[in-house]
Length: 363
Image (cartoon, rainbow, N blue to C red; front, side):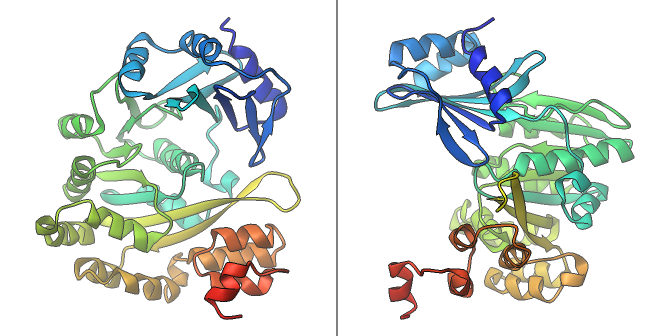
């Protein structure tokens, strides 16, 4: 047994989602959204490096020595599976481990709206799940893929860095490819995917222009493509995709994206007010002729109006959902204010208004 495994067992006992190991600091666990220090000595660089290298694949260790950053998955039998990130910082090596749930929760168990499950029935197009790091994007996508896996008879191909949720093949054939292990890069895997007869392609992260372009092209040529971006809402998601490309390509990308983009789900996690866990607020954009026209014409700022007037289709604004959670007394007022889009709308919920917002809104 590796020495570091004791910390993973502690994560399970404490119900932690993340383990932080940092040179110059004692270990810390993220429990219900907050970092809590473990009663353990301060970790020195050499000691921590020895702990980390014991479980690091040899080829990943070489990359880490060259670049200062790596990602990989680690599994401790009968305990759990973890997404590992190693990085260099001013005081030496550090690492963060995120626990990957072994059980894939359904859309219903996650409390997601029915329209999210419907995305698994689409036969082509691009569906994006977005939000900040740690907002549950992978969990949402796993639930959608799981539903497709159990209700369709297709080939599902995932490209991830690292592979997080492992899907057994039920009605579908599911193949997982890990960047750096099974394929050189996201873009290389996507180029190869078109020769592998996939029906559904999951791109773990759309990081660069080439990957985004290949994902859009795959969606436009009859594949159902799921991907993630670190954007806050639907409007910023569309803008982010367009802005990745040079100016001379943007009109062409807008046109292709307007036809292939089927939905955007933007999500943010909140701590439940009663301390029982976390809850997700969502923004949902679904393709309509009006949405396609606004994307094609570069009028993304008007997407808000389309979302607000199409609630019956399942669309919703992030701030609307946050306000619903507030009215149901499920989340704290200060956290709602911190994570909402339109700050002025939520000032009324605060007991004390931060000075910078008093000045901003002249209150």
